[in-house]
Structures are given as C-alpha cells and as structure tokens.
Picture (spheres, rainbow, N blue to C red):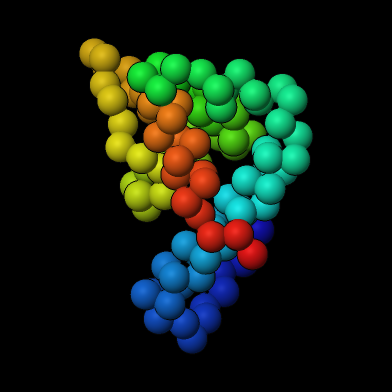
Length: 104
C-alpha cells in the first residue's frame, strides 16, 4: 500500500465514480435489509421521531463512523440533529433515504 499511482482521471470523474460505488453499496445493503427484515424490524417500525446516534447508525449500516461522516457530507444520508455535542439521525429519515436509493 506504499505505492503512489497516478491515473489520467479528472477529479470530478473520480468523485462521480466514488458516488456511484456508494450508491451500489447502498443498493446492496437495502436489498439485504429488506430480505433479512427480522432483526432490523424494530428499527424500521419504530417511532418516526426517534433519534438514532451516529454510533447506532454505523452499526445499523455495518460501517465505521468515518463512513457515516463521509456519507453525510456527500448528502447520501439525511440531515443530522444535534443534542449538545452529539449527532443524531431520525430513524424514519434514514429509512426513507435508504428506500430512495436506486436499486440495481
């Protein structure tokens, strides 16, 4: 991993490729969650105003907190809600953002 590779790709093309990769990953995750609806059913059926911490969101998507921050900055996830220094998402908004992703 100590190699530096130069590629003839424009920065905007790289950004678009990264976004497309994230969309594909979300689509696969969406299919998996809908298929395995058993353990995550309580998250999906919960109160629409309930807030989920950043840590719980990362656990739900099976990714790290850094990835959640990146997805948030790329506007893949819905806006955050703050309580003091802590960051939260609304459960229903997370579900809607997942459902609105294109399925491939």
